Image 1 (cartoon, one colour):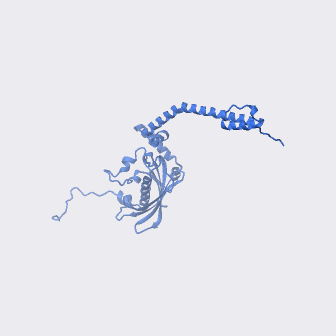
Image 2 (cartoon, rainbow, N blue to C red; image 1 turned 45 degrees about the vertical axis):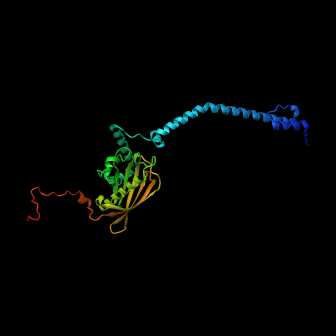
Image 3 (spheres, rainbow, N blue to C red; image 1 turned 60 degrees about the horizontal axis):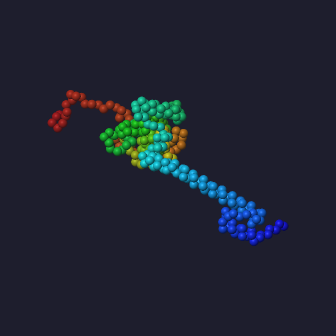
Amino acid sequence: MLRTVTSQSTRSARKALLLNPVANITKRQFSQVDYHVYKGNQEHFDRLNKLKEHRAYNRSKNFKWYLLTFVLGAAISYNYSVHEIVDKLFTAKLPQTEAEKLMYLNKLESQLQSLPIVQSLSADPRYKSFRSYELLNQISTVPTVSQDTIHQTLTAPGGVAIAPLYFINKEGKEAVTVVHLGKKLSGYPFLVHGGMLGLVVDEVVKNNCASSYEVDPSGIHTVSLETNYKFPTLADNFVVIKSKYVDSTVNHDEKLVSGSIETPTGRTLVKSKAILQILPGTLSTREVAAPVAEPAANETKRGWFWF
């Protein structure tokens, strides 16, 4: 067994090393093993000192870049929100001129016609298709000078820029509507406002009920609408709104219609269920389309003193 004898000088050297780690201690004051430990500690302290000096130099060197970045970030955040910055960098710019607007509308129309669900339903003989803004004509209940609010505000680029495409299957009493919801309809950044989604579903299910019973949509009243939001709806995208008349009568004139909003690939975004009432005296679509007979110009008005 190797036996190590620690002399008085070695003990005093260790004590001096503890009091002052960088003391100038000679090899004679140590055993061979202790000396190598001391040399290792001294090299370690040297590396630490060099590292501290290097970090201090980098801090002083990079301080101006930190200050410049802070000032630049403060200036940008004072003038622009995060939503505006991301909108300018990552989303398509809305058209400003008439030529740009025409290109924008043509691009949306091309994207609409190339959707697989549009091509599939267009080839299905059970469905009849048409294009009309009338599906969303009563989308605003706020009193205005003109009730055709959808035609004045939401049809601009960034809203519902192109007319919705409507497919109806009268035999199955179901309908599919494909509509583009622009980025101006967002509530939270890049997400379509939940109230707008509820209004769109409400109008589509009412039109489906009107088509199923062949009555004027203006004569249908929404008694209740239950809406469940399953997944956020991204703005500036096409959505597919499906509605189906449920063969169930709640009351005498109240009908149950289910609806949903999906992505073109089939992901469910919103599910809803509506109870609709056909108001008494509502005209059929044939009566609405029929011309109103006008009285003859030479007809004599009859009143109290005329017989």
